[in-house]
Each structure stands twice: as C-alpha cells, then as structure tokens.
Picture 1 (cartoon, rainbow, N blue to C red):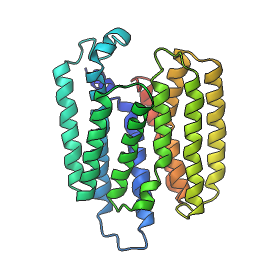
Picture 2 (picture 1 turned 30 degrees about the vertical axis):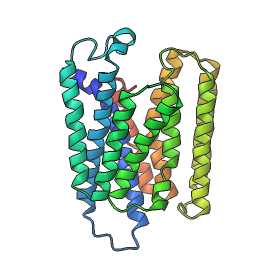
Picture 3 (picture 1 turned 45 degrees about the vertical axis):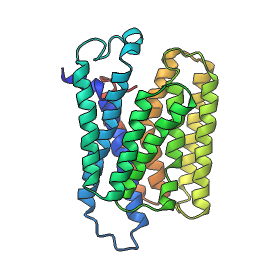
Length: 294
C-alpha cells in the first residue's frame, strides 16, 4: 500500500525538488549577502521545501489522474489503472497538496505566494492539456522554472535572479520532450532537437558570466565536461533508439537535474555546497531502483 502511494507521487523525484530549492535559496542568499537580509533563512528554506514538494508531487498525482484512460492501455500496472489506489483518493490527494503548497508559500511572502499561484496554474494546465509536442514540453519546463523562482523569491527576487534559471527551463523542456516518446520511440530526431535546446541553455550560462551574474570561471570547465558526457549519451540513444533506451535516458536526465543545480551553485562560487548537493543523487537513484520515476 505504501509503495503504491510512493509510486503515485513519484517519490524518488523528491530529491530533485530538494536540489532545486536548496540551490536557488543559496544563490539568492549569496546575491543579497551585501544587503540587510533579515529573513529567518532556516525557517524560510523549510517552508519553501514543503511548498515545492507539495506542488511537485501534486502535479505527479494529477498527471496520473488525467492519464487514467491512457494508462489502462499503456501502463495497466500503475496504481490507478490497477485499482490499487482509488481515483477519488488520487484526486483528493492532488488538490489537497496543491492547496497545502500554496499555503506554505503564502507563509513566506506575498511575492512567493504569487509565484506559487502561477505555478499551480502551470501545473494544472500541463496535466489537463495535451501532453504531446513542444508546447506541452515548454509548459513543464516553466513549472520547474517557476519552482526555482519561488525558492529565490523567498529571499528576494529581481530581474537578474529571474534570468538565472533559464538553463533549467531549457533542460527540463528538452527532458520532457524526450519523455513524450518513451512508449512509442518512433521519433529519434527529438534527441537532436533536445540536445540543441540544452546547448542553447548553456549559451545563456556564458552570458551570465559575461554580465557578472556568475563569477567562478572554473565552473565553465565542469560545464564543458558535463556537456561532453551528455552529448555522448545522446549520440548512443540516437543510434540505438528504442523504448528501453529512451526510458533509460529520461530517468538519467531527470536525476541530471541535481548536477545541473550543483553546476549553478558552483558557478556562483559555492564549491562545498555544490559538492554536498551532488550527494542527493545517491538516495534518489537508490529509491529509483524500487519505485519508478518516469
């Protein structure tokens, strides 16, 4: 029973939520460190994590609620189509978590509550709308982008910090577009387009260095290594494009959100924090062995 609910909310993905919030929080704190930041940072971080977890997992449950008929044919073993979790219970969980996420965000600031409200709308729009094509993929990317903004706004948000998570937007959009072909695996060109989008997001990274948003230039070496490894993985999937290889790279890319967040932290000069953030990979991948994440 517990495992069914863990599968319903995609429990292993919670570590990528931790990663998003912690990275965004620490970058915002460093950005405003020269000013009088009087916010209770530990309490604010906890509230932000709770808000983000509720909203993210609510989106996962809503995804299965709206996909009930499709999953009956393509994924009958999942908790809802198999009947192990009742549909009414799933709907109740989803909207309760959306409400709780908004309440937690509201306890931080009006700005954070506003972004959380936008995120709620984006989540519902993605789950209730067409799930194929670039428009849907961009919508999912925006969900992660607004999640980052929500965490940043807990400390303080301006236009510079609002631009910082654009690589996250590009990466998650690319990841989502690939995941749309996970079952059929009949469009290998998606891999090339997704790679191009991730490269575009990386170019934005260079702009942040040029304009001084980032200042630890050794992070560019780490970025170059990460892009090389990713390119090799993409090439392998492109050459052997099938449902198994697509599912594998989707899972890898989802956990790749953690190194991406760590790279953003490293770029801001927070070396130790970036290394510690990478440790989230271990419990995430361990949990992913027992509970599906895609």
